[in-house]
Length: 209
Ligand code: AP5
Ligand code: MG
Image 1 (cartoon, helix red, strand yellow):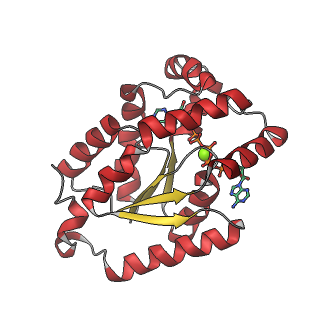
Image 2 (cartoon, rainbow, N blue to C red):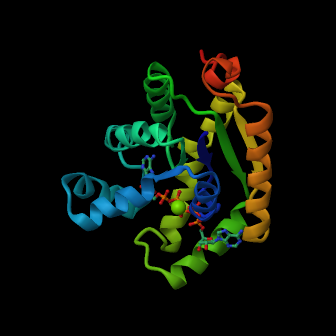
Image 3 (tube, rainbow, N blue to C red):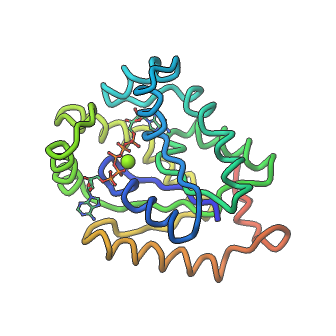
């Protein structure tokens, strides 16, 4: 199974993707976590990324695309992956699609986390009190939400055109949301997804323009 998550900051992508990965034995690839590791390790990529992340802006596409590709191939050979935070722009989505399709590994499903702004702000304020993420200051959170609306939200229509979106109500207790997601993924696994030649045409992105 190859799943990607679309959701605003604080929607619960990290919380839920960890659980989904454990349940289906998938590799979790979280670009935000990977970038924070690069920053902490002092790499050249981390050096480039840090200023963007601290402002709440997206890191340039080429940096994130290069960081993600080989991980996706490796994860696919181990039975599938869940992408938390990638793709995040239409340019990333198009690059990822062309690249993955050429290798026979395009995404099966895009999980959209449906949640309102007030709940996001409350959750991220809670996390800011408990952890110290450099981008969890209130002004930066608001900017990240604007960046999501402008640059990432359009991916929803992009994947809807391809027919691979599963919407999840992302409000409520963590366990209840996990149950909703697992139920949806089990349904798709049983009814819609098949491997290799048996996979339905829509899973390959037949509607891609
Ligand atoms: P990233 O690390 O991906 O951050 P984000 O998308 O802003 O999302 P968060 O990690 O803040 O939220 P989440 O949805 O994972 O929610 P979580 O489970 O933590 O990206 C950071 C930065 O890296 C970006 O701004 C950008 O600069 C860069 N970047 C990353 N990917 C990139 C890309 N592809 N291209 C370019 N740049 C990129 O939950 C949030 C809080 O709520 C937690 O405290 C949690 O405990 C709590 N919570 C979770 N679920 C619930 C619930 N059901 N009820 C109550 N509380 C809950
Ligand atoms: Mg996260």
